[in-house]
View (cartoon, rainbow, N blue to C red):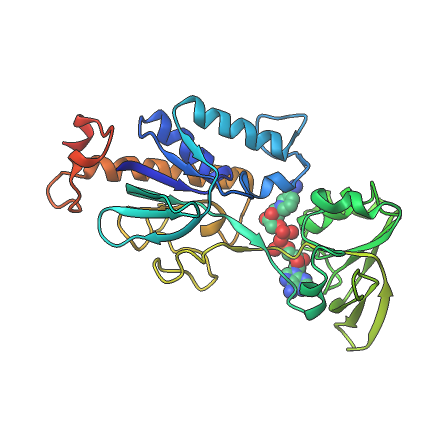
Length: 328
Ligand code: NAP
């Protein structure tokens, strides 16, 4: 049995792994088979992660975090968790390969997934003109007119990035005021290829086999019109990935995993959570990393308490590598 398994390989998961590995907890990181590295793998320039004054590419930052965790002994598995058994002191993690891993503690850091608008054409034309990742798919829209839906930092970032390829980028926002930070707004507004469509909701995506346009509804007067385009990038925020635990851990009203105050302790002893999956508000790479630190330190304290009077009934002798001083 492991001391700790970390589920997720974004900034929260890898930072938890760095701290846990440096504390000789020999963490196993389940990094996902296709989405290893988390949301930053779909990002270009990261300009606000401290320590990189010139900025750093999202994937490069994640590679560095992984290397740092592995340097101290973290083991990374590219597989997906299919089910979790969190009952009792021994946590069981079943992977897509069928392998079952056991640990005395768990860090749940599965991040968040792109939010969908929730209209029929969106689903049908996903991958055929509807995309959730500008850096992944922008290249396919050379000299085409496309739209980005949303008014936050992600929408501004995606729109600005997409002007490298597209001939025209509409930013469709449901209000007349952006949520994005000033610097991101200014950059998008100064870009000649970007045109803002205010007070507009996308109510249908048109096209048989590929996107040919969208139907827009004016959010003020309710009138409808069509806008011809060949691509729609949806950037309307993210939802926490909680499908593995929605009936196992308490959730908040906002759908994130509930944690106890400023700690990473969930409603189940020995299970800790970190990063976007607990954060409905800040959701930055650096806050996720800080949250991963908290989780690793909470895990350390939890493991150190095993074997003490009143501690959860797990046999400390069964945990590989648990230092005797900590178990006592
Ligand atoms: P966000 O800040 O939650 O913004 C989501 C945007 O989508 C809002 O403008 C919202 O409209 C709109 N929206 C939400 N649901 C919608 C729906 N069903 N239909 C149409 N529009 C909808 O999400 P985000 O832009 O992904 O950013 C998330 C976090 O990551 C933020 O903290 C952001 O600062 C951070 N981030 C930072 C950077 C950077 O600094 N480089 C880059 C990307 C993201 P309303 O405004 O009307 O609510």
